[in-house]
Amino acid sequence: MATMESLIGLVNKIQRACTVLGDHGGQGMSLWEALPSVAVVGGQSSGKSSVLESIVGRDFLPRGSGIVTRRPLVLQLHKTESGAEYAEFLHAPKRRFTDFAAVRKEISDETDRITGKTKQISNIPIHLSIYSPNVVNLTLIDLPGLTKVAVEGQSDSIVEDIENMVRSYVEKPNCIILAITPANQDIATSDAIKLAREVDPSGERTFGVLTKLDLMDKGTNATEVLEGRAYRLQHPWVGIVNRSQADINKNVDMIISRRKEREYFETSPDYGHLASRMGSEYLAKLLSQHLELVIRQRIPSIIAMINKTIEELNAELDRIGRPIAADGGAQLYMILELCRAFDRVFKEHLDGGRSGGDRIYGVFDHQLPAALKKLPFDRHLSLKNVQKVVTEADGYQPHLIAPEQGYRRLIDGSITYFKGPAEASVDAVHFVLKELVRKSIAETEELKRFPTLQNDIATAANEALERFREEGRKTVIRLVEMESSYLTADFFRKLHAEPERKPEKNANPPGPNNDLYHDHSLRRIGSNVSAYIAMVSDTLKNTIPKAVVYCQVREAKRSLLTNFYAQIGRREKERLSAMLDEDPQLMERRSQIAKRLELYKSARDEIDAVAWK
Ligand SMILES: Nc1nc2c(ncn2[C@@H]2O[C@H](COP(=O)(O)OP(=O)(O)OP(=O)(O)O)[C@@H](O)[C@H]2O)c(=O)[nH]1
Image 1 (spheres, rainbow, N blue to C red):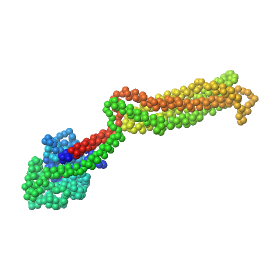
Image 2: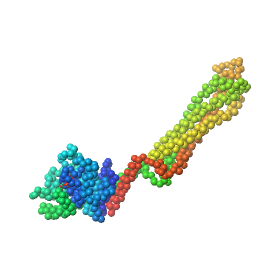
Image 3: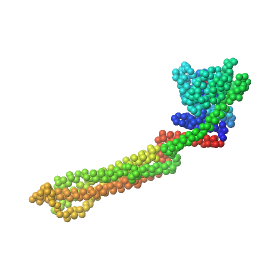
Image 4: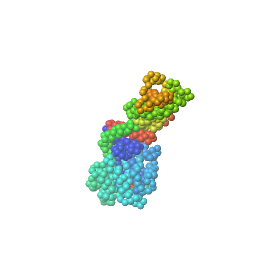
């Protein structure tokens, strides 16, 4: 089984790590809160600081009249084997204090840094570690002394503020309460005992400490209390004799004062029989032993809590993505992977699986036919216009059999109208594709953390789509122009072979005038051209989608990012890492989680190593 030192040392290590991470509790169950600690509680001038100092064996706490301890002091004691003795503050981690007078000054300076040189209090703790061969591994928290009245320069709420702060520490079920009461005060009026009773009614985590035994009135003694008859606690009361103010002024050494304390009990007629269970050294051992017991009981629940937290942190890391590799090759690989992930989503949109691709079919099936239908052929092939075009084409010599030139001009004129719907189809599909790029970027989970790369991909994809649009436009215009460059002669031959249809009943009856430009023949020209244009329209209705798919959709699927790949392949490392820039908040969050994870894992390893030794 683990030794006491290693167990308490373990807790100290974990607490220290928690402190470094800023994990002092906060919301929810934190590792810090799962660990036991010892809080020193008592009225002002009851001797709290003195008890702490004699446990540590060094003189390092600020002293003076009135309210001296104005911020919680989290004091971690680490026993050293080497004999080295020094102190370190968390807020000044690089500085090693070997002069304990300087430690005292730093505590009071650091207190003032937050509270100013006032008599105000703050609940932001100061963290101090003391390494010494003369201590046991222990974490102690020194708290401002409880008071009954506010003094000059303090707010009216100070009494309550202090009590609330102290309570916030001692009400935690893992907090061991060191309740300090001066022996020259009636135990029934002890602030420390009053608060301890409130938060720990069964007394199982309260240690009663009686200070100033040497200051009791002659003829009185504290055996009633020390033997547990005056006020019963689960743990035995410990009596203490600290240095008096006179001793402090004379700079009496702590080691000497410990010896004097021991002698006091050994030679005391009142407490001689209790001597082996009195004094600050005994108190330190008692606390240490109790702490060990508590830790041992708590190990299973601490491990369970650590494991649960590790799981949660891992899940969160997975969600926000793992850190990015540092070398250029790996970064390039990562960028390509991310592009491929985007490309996959984009293709799913086109090929089905995700919505959006069907809108392209909508362009071909609705938009294009509707636009073709709306073309103003009625106007272009109106009797008046046919007559105008045909007569103009004939010039001074009317046509003999059929107005060949007139036909050609009417057809050419009509076919030009197809350019509009052809280009509109190209544009419509372009916008669908662009929208799909935007959607796909937003939907690519892997890309979420890389806003810069998202931008780069969007820019590259849109550039490519622009090129495809240009190609599509050229191709469909070419299709239209091809229609006017060579007409289907067969169509007219067939027309010629057909017997002339009888004019409809409500049409003008053929007059005696056999004029070439007579309504009837003009109407016939118009209807022939119209039939031809209808055939061309049918053809284009089929070929424009083919051209659009060939130039735009197929290319988007095949080579949307081809140019981009070539570009990034040539880029130097700095630009690659710039592309993988993340949201700074996210990076911060990740590094926090990573640090936490590290802490929890090492805590688990340490517990494993200690608990099963
Ligand atoms: N004679 C004697 N004096 C003591 C004893 N304990 C404390 N004192 C004196 O009582 C005074 C107050 O002691 P501190 O240890 O500063 O008390 P505190 O509770 O830490 O005070 P605050 O932090 O201001 O609340 C000092 O002058 C000590 O020397 C003791 O056991 N015997």
